[in-house]
Length: 190
Image (cartoon, rainbow, N blue to C red; front, side, top):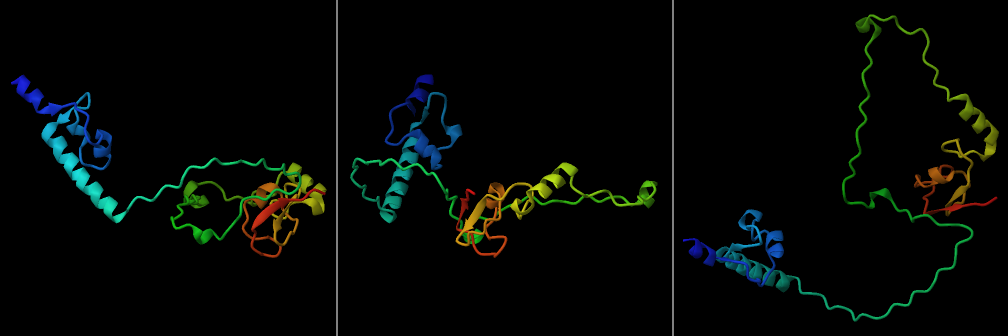
């Protein structure tokens, strides 16, 4: 009986690989025993179904002719010494995939009546720390118009309003001064 069951199973090299048959769903993982052995009748059925499916796919999607392989000549790029263009920017609506952003849920603050604590007499201090405040004051007109923390070193193209630091310049799609579209951002050396 054991010999009869072994004759119905095969480890022969198939017309299609087991991987192909499994990827396209013609054989399940449970149908393959250790060593890649599959029932002969099941394998023949899967191969014939896969062959007919593949022929149908090729009929409606003919293979594209391949271009002849030619040697490519790579020319060295000259080093960039002045302005460096950042990635080209387009409208944010060009993506067709929906963007999922995490939602911020504002925690509810219990009222003083429910906690039994006295109400605060003055709002907490919301001023920036003195170090940041003095740094922004020393920068004066040289401070980034967005963050006010760093020196402005970059200008958007095409308007070239030098008004942003590098970090903020990489985040905006419109010039903060004229609201014109930003194609690229360039570092300006002064």
